[in-house]
Amino acid sequence: MHKKVVVITGASSGIGKALAEKYADEGWNLVLAARRDDRLKELEEKLVQTNVLAIKTDVTKEIECRELIGEAIKKFGRIDVLINNAGISMRALFHNTELDVLRQVMDVNYWGTVYCTKYALPHLLETKGSLVGVISIGGYIGLPGRSGYSAAKFAVRGFLQTIRTENLKKGLHVLVAAPGFTASEIRKNALVANGMPQGNTPRNENKMMSAEECATHIYIAIEKRKRGLVLTFLEGKLTVFLAKFFPSFIDKMSYKMFSREPDSPFK
Image 1 (cartoon, one colour):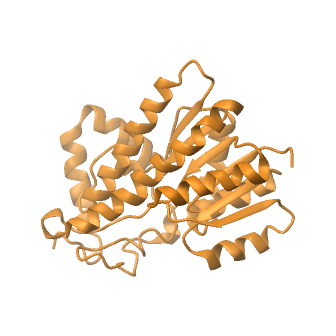
Image 2 (cartoon, helix red, strand yellow):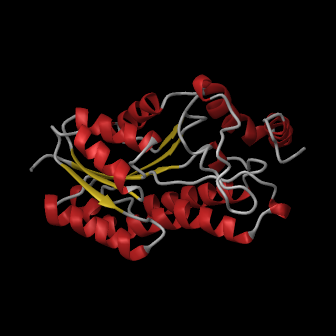
Image 3 (tube, one colour):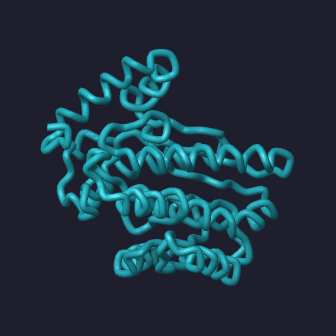
């Protein structure tokens, strides 16, 4: 019970699930949050040797985020790491997209991070712990066809940078982690213009970084208390670097790449 405690949102699949398994392997106590209760229970049963608190949580609801953190403190008495991983994507041209789609994406990706951070921050300051936001390359450059997604990820990056500066002398560690394309369900569940999930991924998931590899990189970055993490070379580090000096070139390359996807909204 005196082990360190990590809270992970969006823990039922993809990077969040892989992070849960990684922290379990490292002997941490886990607080896992997601909307899909059945998936959480399956993961809890899989991690039978680990002290796990699984809580069905919709991060778009402030009260559920407050209850999540409260239950974590009630059971374990501390929080050492909060990983804001819950996220949803979209795929549609802005002028065709219903505004409720953008609101939903912002509610999950941005407000979910804000709500959980608000209630976990006092406890993280007590432990001089780590506050983590999982964004994407879309938090550094505007991805065509993903206006709401990029906007939310930019917002998370700005929010966490501000929290870092405000608590500069209090021992808080803040990591902004930006995976490149990672194999997960996020593209299958991405919302189209009318708010329905697109159902199929437009990219070859087998050629992407695995969620397990991504989780390992994030775990190490937290242990080393890094400020930022950008994953994959070509679609990650190089893109972010070039965008600083050759933004027009990156705009053209992004347009070209996304327009070539199957069923691209640009066609």
